[in-house]
Image 1 (tube, rainbow, N blue to C red):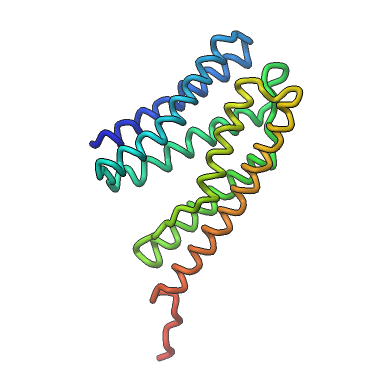
Image 2 (image 1 turned 90 degrees about the horizontal axis):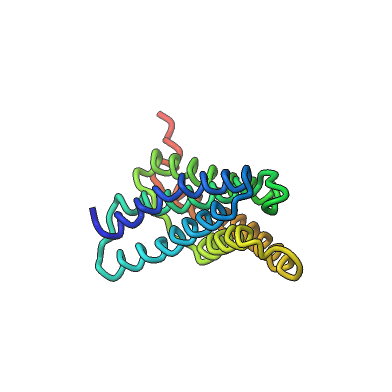
Length: 197
């Protein structure tokens, strides 16, 4: 259990705390719940960068970390996006449903593709894309922007830009990952047709 993996596990444990704080804030309107939600989300977002830095600097890359790190990201972001897609009026703005559908669809297709490639090829090679990382950052900033209530007045235009950028980046990264998956399947011997007897 490396230091990087411990930080990742802490990030996973922060997700239910974050969810509870957002739900309580929407139900009661008590500002301290919103502040705790912001704090927990911010800590989780910063720790994402921290565990990656520690893993690279101190050579703490592990198979467990390769599974836990993206899982922690998905749990945090999907929970934030889903919570903010609900009708939280008058306390919080609502994310458009198309963003939720885009994020869910990409992740579902990637999970299905991972299973197919793993079954057909035995090994899955995932090459992180800059556009995917950018989309993740935009999703995180959009969630924080909403929780901080900066999406009124001129901040509304920035909020719309963040939402649009996150959605477009997520869709493009999904298409690129699909393209990579098709290449891996085509390169696999199991993809070639069997000769007739």
